[in-house]
Each structure stands twice: as C-alpha cells, then as structure tokens.
Image (cartoon, rainbow, N blue to C red; front, top):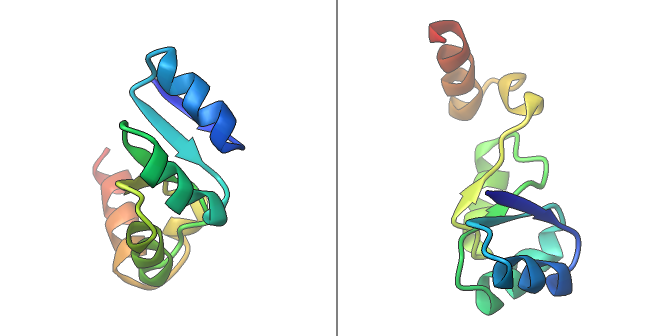
Length: 88
C-alpha cells in the first residue's frame, strides 16, 4: 500500500499504521520524509525529465512517480515510458 501524504505528520501516522511506502508531492518535504521514515519515500513532483529524476533521488527519494508528462518529452525517460506503453 502506497499512501499519498501532504505533511510529515501524516506520513509518520501512515507508517505507524503499516503502509508499505509514502508518496510525497512536495519537493521540500522529501528530505524530511527520507530522514524520518523507515519505509520508502516515492517522489511525485512532476518528474518529467532526467534532471527532476536526479533531483528527487538526490533529495532522498527511493523512487519516483512518473505521470503523463514523462511520456511527452524527448529525453531517455520519455522514450522509455512510450516504449513501455506500446509494449503493454
């Protein structure tokens, strides 16, 4: 179960209740969540190119949530998403 959180307080409460991972939509909250939580933090911060992916991982996220914008660019992430969708 991945729980979407808007605050560190909510993320900590969700962790206590047994969720498997936390999805955070606020770039500034990622380092706090990564430090305070024992479960994976997934960044969901308009990750649409390699730079935003690298930024989320550098801030402590263990993964990223790729939305529709990820398929619209011309970098390697967009190509990978489009190829995955075509194969599915």
